[in-house]
Length: 353
Ligand SMILES: Nc1ncnc2c1ncn2[C@@H]1O[C@H](COP(=O)(O)OP(=O)(O)O)[C@@H](O)[C@H]1O
Ligand code: SF4
Ligand SMILES: [Mg+2]
Image 1 (cartoon, rainbow, N blue to C red):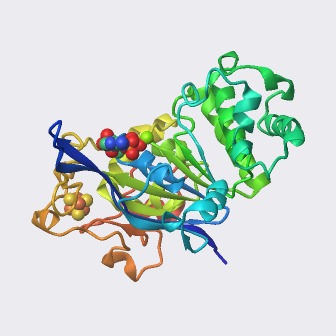
Image 2: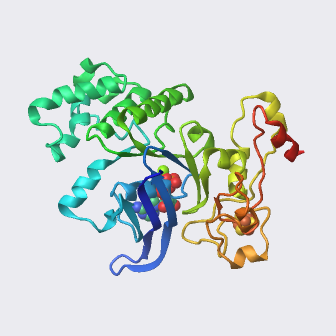
Image 3: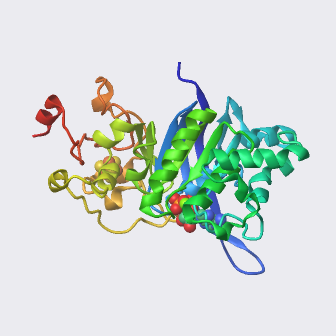
């Protein structure tokens, strides 16, 4: 049975926009996250993808309690963590850890690697009593593929990929159940990205972890995600299993994102349709009415300006059990295969011509 570990419902984060110096007056709000729902199942990786500024980091920060939501709930094993405080909150926080985007700025340059990785033990000494810490930190270095003798070195003595391994070791220190990784490989060279993703994949099995893995590009999360959610302007617009999103996307925004993903096979690349979106992403202070994607959508019609599309299985696919039957927030959802599969199965290829 699939067991959920985190359930996010109606999550909202609005940052007030104020005017005036002495008498601050609220004149609007940055709607960074504007109604996000998703479930993270035990042991799975949920990829969250969307362009810069769509609210991914704000979701991540709320999951690990670095930001308080404006509205909505985050349930961890059935308990709403946004309502917890004191000891109960501390114990939940231990179980949900974050790995940050930029290993160049997220590690304190004045601390040794040993102190950086062992710092979470200051808050949770019960996990590693003082005399035991050095050995625990060395074990963690070993687990992430670094030499345990490097314990007294400083971050600048490591490469970007090694620094991200240090960030991951720190995330593991308290033996969490969930890791929220906010663009963990975006700042790394392409050649190093795969190594770090493979490491995270291995650690997931070894430590029984559930991941929320954030990226701005669909190609990065493809190989690590079991399910993928696509975000646009503070909301998830489409979510489903890996193959549903990559091979049977029904939301125009997902289709546009996929059409920009690099395709290694030259022949497949030639057959791929490029969808160029018109205009820029609107400001999160001024979200379009109805469907928030409508100002850039080539399929937009009158209804799109009037009615907010719900994130649900579109009615035309509801009775089928095929891969298009997954949640998509579009009034005119339509299956479209953007990236041709490398070896298309016969029946699929026919449906395409
Ligand atoms: N502390 C803040 N105050 C005001 N606006 C913010 C704050 N943090 C983020 N934002 C805004 O919220 C939106 C979403 O930001 P973010 O979650 O960082 O997006 P992403 O991680 O997808 O790039 C952006 O428009 C950003 O400028
Ligand atoms: S609801 Fe309308 S504007 Fe929004 S994605 Fe669908 S077709 Fe485009
Ligand atoms: Mg971000």
